[in-house]
Image (cartoon, rainbow over all chains, first blue to last red; front, side, top):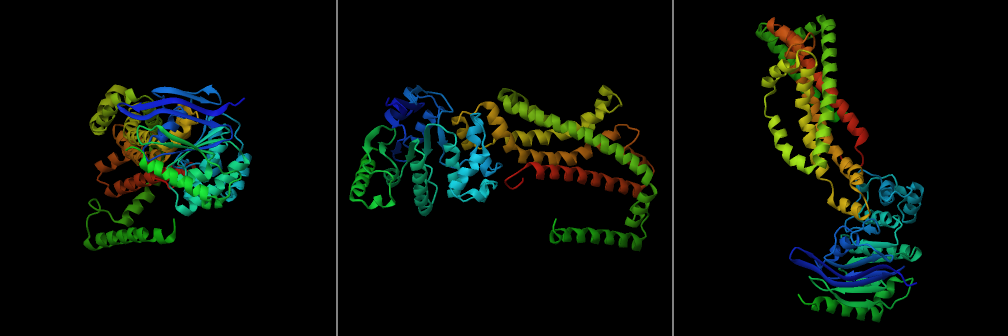
Length: 249
Length: 249
């Protein structure tokens, strides 16, 4: 049965008179990596707040794993733009937070195992302020991953990092995700990042955001870093750039 | 504390006492007007039995009062935080309560509550609870909105938001309030003893003032300062034990 991890249909949302999203249709299949690119302020974070149940849409449907999920919380693994770690908790205690909230069994051994897999084994009992920005983002990602939800929502997770750390994080994310295929909805304003990571890219217009185009990325898995030099990749990047800069303002 | 940081204040205090001793010796000033440090020390040694009784009485009163003040302050903070309607209704009254001079209120308390321990405790609670309530309330309401969003999208309820985010976030500011309240509690205890009591450093001060025993007054002052430092130190110790993972307030 082709049940999707996420189905969004005809989603509208406005804050008072300000319409932010208009008629958004979007699906994320099981184990699919989907990106949403759009100009800054095009309502991408609002989309996450709607999917996460923090906001109730003005109109439209949201289904997670086939179940209607409008206004329902606790059904996604979420990684915000800032790591948003609790400064008074050790790294391993931060990682288990999502499980603690959903009253799943808190398994510190599992947390440490994962920390070791991402090269943070020496930091399990450290506090967030002792970690670099990239390391903190890895912790935030693990926290989302260990929530053990079918759908992971990542909100511009690497936008605050420098270019080198960002490239490292792409590789890191791909390696983990290719080993543990979850459905991912990834929001970014970085075109290259979207193409490098995703199976499908949705291009959003400026406010009110609509889906301008849905692009299937033709590169296989596991995906290699050199794909960015592929002529096909360069062409797609050009096309997306034109779409974004040419979109009505 | 490191020797390097402890040395300058230690030298200042020793120099002050030496200068004081020198002045009283050379000027021949009357001891009832300004006793010498050596004279004060002698008075302390002579009176040590009586002083011990009085100090213990004050310490006991102060600790009961401080404990009640902390409980009241925390209760007020939590109730006002959880019930915003009550907060907007009561907060101005709290501020006004701090502008009523305790010295004027104290005799009324005796009329209402008698000469027992009750009016004394009320005085101490009145001077103690406010800094704790205000500091804790501030800490509770200023917790990280990003972490709150994260927790809500992960399915956290209000209770989890309070116990896992707001309360731990409020701890450092609460301790700032506790430190202020700790020093106030000594002063509150002394004032409440002036209301009329059989024993206590406050009572001792009144007796010695009538007898023009400036030397014994100075001993009493030194004891009050020492008591304040001890309570303050206990609060700092508790803070070290409970506030983790970031610099303390």
